[in-house]
Length: 220
Ligand code: GRF
Image 1 (cartoon, helix red, strand yellow):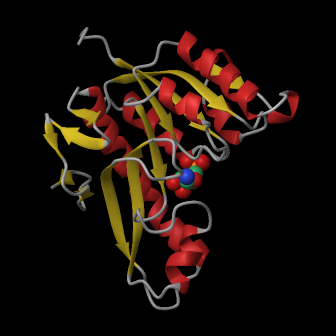
Image 2 (tube, helix red, strand yellow):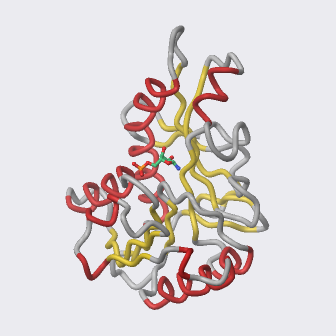
């Protein structure tokens, strides 16, 4: 490691509260990193407003001939900023295989379910309709399959009788923020890696995802 703070590229599509959690952690010296770019498929995303204009990059996919062109242009823009980690934080567009392979082993995603349950959209609805008693969020390495890469850590919350998808999402969100920050602390400390499709902490393969405890620490 160079001793310089790790460089983070953050991919966003909407509100950007997870990006804000990373910005707050950096400002509060709880995360030794710098955001070197925020990238979006939605030029009007509120998330972009959370950083200074030179850090913003966006492209409307309608301006591109297809997924390959969009992915190539965004990947080139990301690579120009020389990030150590690429963090999908509420990024809602599918990334093609070439994009994923280019950044393999250093691209992470936060997803609002206890993966492998409920990849894709409407996770809160699915958890309630299934009668689950617990729900949560997962951070994982990104691979070529949707929400299916190596799991790193999860935050778990109870589902309360009468919960609505909106109430559940609102209760989960602050836990997502702590989860993402905690995982990024491991990443920038050089403790997190992916090998043979599995997550490793300190060189040891994770047999099950770490779990976020009440005070924001990650436990085996
Ligand atoms: C979060 O629930 C995240 O897990 C999911 O989309 C939501 C984005 O929220 N992928 P925000 O844009 O970070 O506020």
